[in-house]
Image 1 (tube, rainbow, N blue to C red):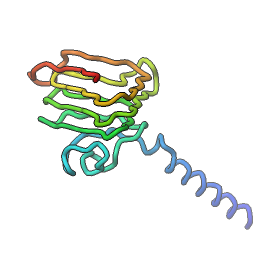
Image 2 (cartoon, one colour):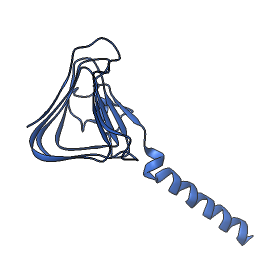
Image 3 (tube, rainbow, N blue to C red):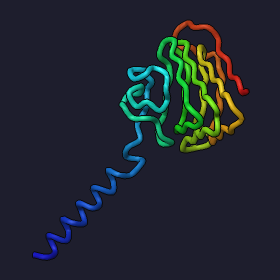
Length: 148
């Protein structure tokens, strides 16, 4: 009888460690602005309702959205614009990390209508590809990438 109980205990521990692993919880995060409609750290602004982590692919493409990160931000990748004019900015910027699985994957992709503004004297670390294109998902005006 001890062997089946031991086996069940091992299986429960294995199942719990799989559920708790970061890779198992990584999902695509889309800006919906349902919280305060401006703050990166407000989980209600994201779908699903969880603030992005370094394991998440993030898309900000809601019409006329202005997303602000205070001091720091992390994501696996960050897509700005494409179907709508969208802005991502930082206040008192210290650091930001965009770390896709491979250095050939997109870290930061600014499409037509996208704007990125980094206010402060921090460092953004891109461990992947930076793309700044005229790609559009619907006819929108151009974009800018600014470092202050």
